[in-house]
Image 1: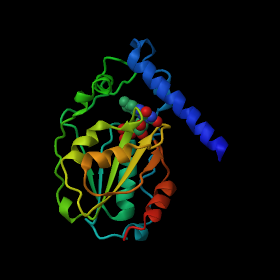
Image 2: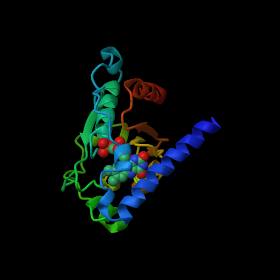
Image 3: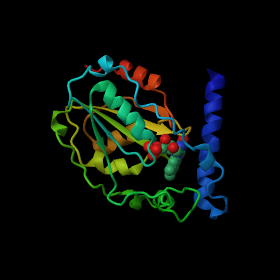
Length: 220
Ligand SMILES: Cc1cc2nc3c(=O)[nH]c(=O)nc-3n(C[C@H](O)[C@H](O)[C@H](O)COP(=O)(O)O)c2cc1C
């Protein structure tokens, strides 16, 4: 157990130092180092869920709201929606992030500037209001990890909705970082709702892992 923890700390250290190098150096090492380490598996593992298991919730009771810049969180969110018979809602920044915008090896990229200036993290969304939000009893909130925290495009959804009476369950995808206190920080931002411990998935999470997590939540 100790060895496992040590390995994950080492991996996280390597990843985060790669990010820091990116945002503070010239872009000569663009697309190398950490960028290679987060190259995502394109394997499509979305389609083979057992249909009977998937129908275990009343449609609309569980809402899966997510932001995904490069598709990993979206894949997990879709799988969760199937498994819970939930309704999916994708958060879309009014100004979409391009590949260049997401280049954390370039200190002049949009994400690097936003990372360095917290006021720029106030990302306007095309829509913060989710249809039938009031009906939902459970909100599962997904995001990628950016520099060890929840990618900030989820912030304006969290700040602009009232989660009173709802259970909120965060999940994230990341290359190596843990979910850390990202869920706790979002719960403080929201100020309402019963927030549960979150779950981190790897960028290419398996169906089984997602399925096991959903089972462990004991959603009705
Ligand atoms: C700007 C940026 C910062 C990132 N920071 C981290 C990080 O601190 N730790 C980590 O493990 N992964 C980090 N990643 C990798 C993403 O969390 C990972 O690839 C995630 O699965 C992407 O999800 P998405 O495809 O839904 O956007 C970062 C990626 C980007 C673009």
